Length: 222
Image (cartoon, rainbow, N blue to C red; front, side, top):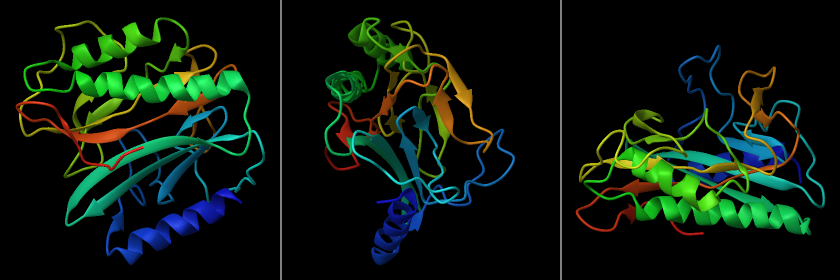
């Protein structure tokens, strides 16, 4: 399968449900052009924002693929991501994926009214415990009426700092962990972030509603 085929399928499924692709033609702050696709497809050392329909890639055995999708339903946006394996992958890459997914749920445990964004980042950082590079330039964010809203939610930090979480907020949490170092580079396409050392990266994301108790996950389950 190619990344173009994944893009075609994403468009088909979104349109089938009468919704819109939130990322398509969205121009984030600092970007020089709108994002040209419905789904971000990031392969191996690509961390996030891989473009599937410009110079499409053919996926092969041993690859890992990050799929990041925003959907606008009845005027409101949700944002979610998973990293999946193509066939058999190396054990150390499987462990990277497992730890990144667990880091997301560690973060979700801190997403409750009265806590602060620093509590989320600190919990991720403590859980990862230096095993992997935590991407610092990218992180979670508010979402709902726009793809990116305040507050910004880093995947590292200090307990008790940052923006207070309030009941009714909708946020997207998204740990990104690199098998090697935390350093990243931006591809010449202006969107795709890659690991500076060319080692693989994993990414998982859920959109949450902050409540007076446990947060409600709005983007299904994985």
